[in-house]
Amino acid sequence: MNTMLSKKYKALQEKLIHIHEKGLVGLNVAIVSSTFTLGRSYQENLWAESLAEFGAHVCVYLPVDRRGPISRSTYLSDTPAGAQYCIREVPAHLLPRNQTLTHELGDMLAEDVPELIVWFGGVMFFGREIYLNENLQHIPVITIYSLSRRGRHAFNWYSAQQDLRSRLQSLAFQVLRAPILTQTLKRAQLTVANTPECTDIIRQYLWSDERIKWARKHEEIPLGFCPHTFSYRAPLRQEARQALPIQADDLVLLHSSRFEANKWPALQGIFEQVEKFFEKVHQTEPERLKQLHILWIGASDNQLSHEFRSLIQGSVFKERHHLISFQTRQRLSTFYHAADLALFAQPSISCQEAIGTGLRILCPSDPSLNHLTTYSNRIHFAELDTWSSALLSIINHLHLDNETLLREQASNMAQKLSYHSLVDQTLQALAQRLI
Image 1 (spheres, helix red, strand yellow):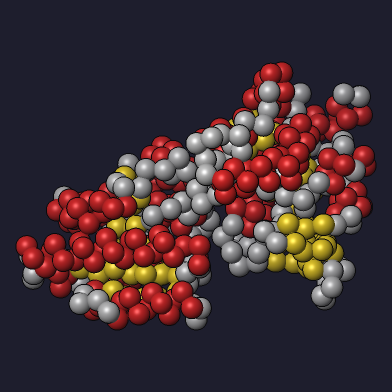
Image 2 (cartoon, helix red, strand yellow; image 1 turned 120 degrees about the vertical axis):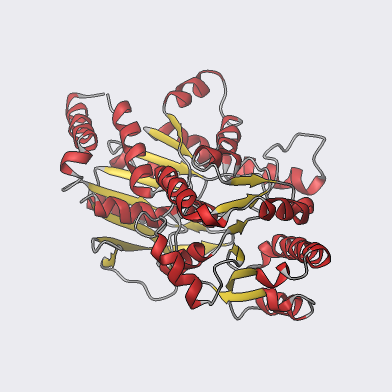
């Protein structure tokens, strides 16, 4: 490392170390993501908000179809705390599966001269210029990965235990995306995996000395939630239940996720188990059934929502089901406060958000979820096909009279998952490696 670069790294290190005393005022940060979407709670969105609220000057670079209207100048977006960050649209050819082709990103980054680049999705074509463009090689880079085998493939094309489709998908990843992955792992000063499973997948693409070098600059830091929205407030629970309206002794289940085609099997599986649960309660304690509700949050005007509505209408317990459209963060937090138990059949950012409000969780044992027990002692694991029995067991052991105290304690424990905390943790990990 030359003397000039060493001085720049030292200056950045000083800013990161003293974030709690001085914030990040004056730090110029670039966020590169092909999936950033305004209004969503994606981690790149929450990173942009948190960095801006720490005082950094943040610019998000996102691809836009070059054949459509493109803003050639930056525009601003507000954070919940009133800070602002910039957005720059990068003209690109948009391909299936969030892939893009562009030659302009590198020039844009070189023009803006960020002191730090945070790259989300380091297996995507969008961002390759971070390691290809020589004018960017002096800028420290954090790469963040969320790879998971669920709903995808085993990332192991040569395994005879995989069916042909899975092996072909794994081979395609090996040919198209793995070269990008290995280059980003070499280029970055810090790599971050959101789950232990993600770390295991990345490890498959490194060997011998390369794996040792990578391990020294790698951290596992989970997904989290908006620090302004998802914490427990007892008065809000009372207000929310009165508004629905839900009686003090009623027990409310909740499922939250956008109603999209790839989530239909999970939605259908949860619905079937809830129906079996209601049937068991009806047979043993018919009067108690009147106190049970489930909120299905995430519906829209799409075909899947209409199909799910038909499932509810065909149920003998249809009065126990409440279908609700997808909500803003603030409204979603209100529903979490009203609920007593959240159901998640697959990994989702909604799971972390629910944990932030101290809510009990029921989910399957999954490599992308198991690590969350570090942040909550109110997670119940059970395979989906046994959920009707699990639900019966959980509600028989619930004590709603001390729920406020338990939720406050759980919410306080979960605040390590707030993005202010996760961003700080990541930046301190980077500072340790800028030597």
